[in-house]
Image (cartoon, rainbow, N blue to C red; front, side, top):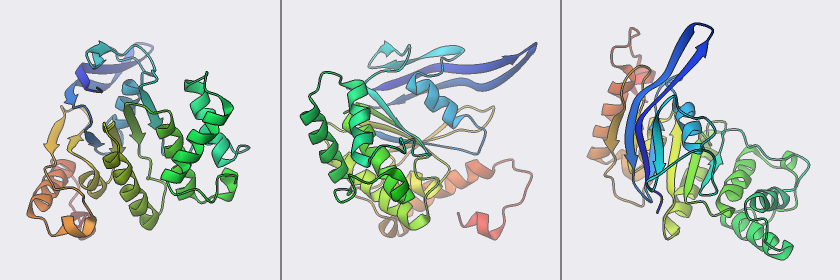
Length: 266
């Protein structure tokens, strides 16, 4: 089980006598085995919320519970993939994955560590570059290594902070489809919390979208679209267009700037 509950989460930074509220009254439930995207404009607190879920940043108010147990720090049931690849440049792709697994499962033999690393690098399509250093790999390949490393520790919960944000559009689509295939193929499914700025990415991936805006409560939109999904299929789906329109409205509601033709097409 990997059900996440956020109960009235708040976070305030204090500098001298000045307080800066970042999150206020955040409450939601993320069901076990679901894929949830968190979306919203820059500065709304998406990455901060993910840090709280990870256990790196304690909230000022409220609590995070996983399967009913309060989160008081990091845990082996959670793994994180960041926008930057966070690979050790002096280690090969395989060594990076081995290192990650060894930090969590310290009693595993070297032979088993190697077998796990090979298995998950093959799952992300990197069987031919296991012995290459990160500097010899493209950005998309490096992110595949980071995803393999996160999955190899077998977490119940996968936290992803704009993992495809620094990758070109074509590679991004390939990685989105790869991630969906990996998630759908596992049983039981992992609970995934995925932060993104991209409306179409959120609609392609998620069962539910949590929209955040500075100083406001969350908006939650169920994404009841058939799986497996592809962008080509979604573009012809009326429900997809309805949810997408709702998200665009949330992004630009009360905005003082007009939406240009390019923005309206997002």
